[in-house]
Structure formats: structure tokens, C-alpha cells
Image (cartoon, rainbow, N blue to C red; front, side, top):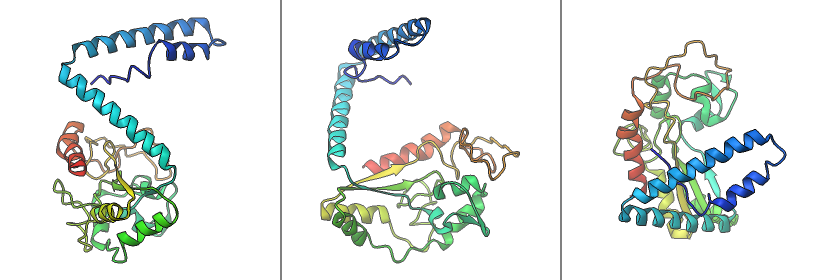
Amino acid sequence: MLFIPDTQIINKDTIMIFLSKMQHNNKQMIKKISYLILLFLLVEGSVQAQLPIELKERWNQMHKSKELALEEFNGAKFGLFIHWGLYSRLAGEWKGQKIPGLGEWIMYHAMIPRTDYGNLAKEFNPVRFNAEQWVLAAKAAGMKYIIITSKHHDGFSMYGTKISKYNIVDATPFKRDPIDELYNACKKNGIRFGVYYSQIIDWYDGWDGGMLRADRKMTDLDKENPMNTWDPGKTTREMYLQNKAVPQVKELIT
């Protein structure tokens, strides 16, 4: 799929600014880059010319809404981003061993098998969670928005999705939807609300496609190939996108 950029961002003026910054570099390299940028703009213009009018209008509306959202985000300045999931219960440790790296990446760094990690849901029961208290605390601190992980790389959904049973409502004794509760609490108290969704990486039932890499060590923090290569499933990229990622994103925005 070809990404069509905003022509108000990439134009002859921005190209000249870019090239002027490279004036001390190799002239041959500048020449090659100039050819590439020119080719890119020609292709971009050709594709836009071929778009039906209704798609052009939808494209312009989308970019206009992005501009307004960015303006609002920059104006808010201070907000809260929450990482919360099954990994929170482990608190950076697996089988009595402290695991290096980010806590939300523990399934990857500790190379936890999918079945073992999934079993954490049976004991995930945050009964003291109170959406109203969280939102009021954020508001009292001067925060203007709250973002929370609806599904991180571990593949576990923190809301009541209908696409997979691997979620906080169906797979845990908690049986509640914290995303929905936070959304309503934010709406009630005048705080903007949004969710993070990991659409590419999903170590539980993502598009690993059998990419087993048995030689990877637990201490290897390399994220060059951040897929589940220690206990991969057979799901292809197309299967994952069509059957989980895209349907869940649609759930979250409707």
C-alpha cells in the first residue's frame, strides 16, 4: 500500500530546506537524494490524480481532523499514559528471577511460553481498581488527558472484546471492563480519553508464522525482530490482521 503524504508538508520549499542542510555533505549524495525526492513527488501527484473525488474528500477530512487533534494535544501539554496488563502482576520478575528490560516486555525478554503467560489471567484480579479515583487524581494534578493500553504486545486485551476470549472480562476473575469504566469516568470529569493498541506485535496470537529461533538467550534485549520466536504460533500476518487487529481497532473506535 502506498502512503500518500500531505502535500502541504512535502513540497518544493521543504525540499530546498532539507537540501540546504546537507550543503556540506557529498554532492553526489545530494544529487541522488534529489532524484529520489523528485520521483516520490511525481508518484504522489500521479496517485492523487487517480483518486476518485469522494476518496480525495475523505482524505482531506482525515488530515484536517489530524491537524485539529494535534493542535488539541499540543495545547493539553500534560497528561497520563498508563501501561497496565498481565505483565503488571509479574512486576518485572519471572520464576523468582529479575528480568532486565521494560516490565511490559517481560514475556519477550523472559521468553515465557504462551500457555504459561496466558495462565496469569486466571489470577489477575485487580479488585481495588477505581476508575473514578484514577481520573480525579489525574485531574487534580492538572492533567488534561488519559491514555491506557487496550492491548499491548502480550496480546491480552484490557477490555471486553468480542473478537477473542483472551481479555480481562472473559479470562480473569475480575470480569470487568476497565477501559469502558475509565472512558465513562473521563467523560464525566471532563478529561480527554484515548487508548493505545499494539497492532503489529502480538506475542500471544500474532503473526509469528512459525518463526522459531531457538538460539535466542533470555538476556538478549535486541528488538530487531520483536516477534514471538521462542514459542511461535502458526498465524500469518494476514490472518492476524484480518481476524484480530483490524476487528479490534474497529471495536475501540465505534
